[in-house]
Image (cartoon, rainbow, N blue to C red):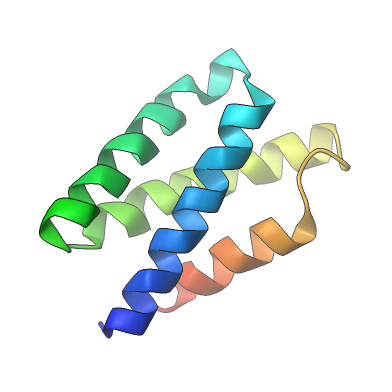
Amino acid sequence: MSPTTNLKIEKACINALEKIRQIGRDDFNEVQSKLEYVIGSYQYDHNPVGLYEVGAMALNKLKGAKTEKPKLITKKLLDELEKALEKA
């Protein structure tokens, strides 16, 4: 994977983490802690595998939240995460 692709998934995961923190729901706690861990891990070792795995989990949770409250999650955030995950 190219460094540009890795930067896209890192940025998408950071944006997802920020949104999850903003939402603050208990059912997001597991995904939030995993995102925090894999982002830190990636910044240390530059291995993006965890970003892709947990990014996919975050995407599913965010899509579920969007169906419940459509204005809570932007389409742009979901699209950014989906596109970054497609590059895997």
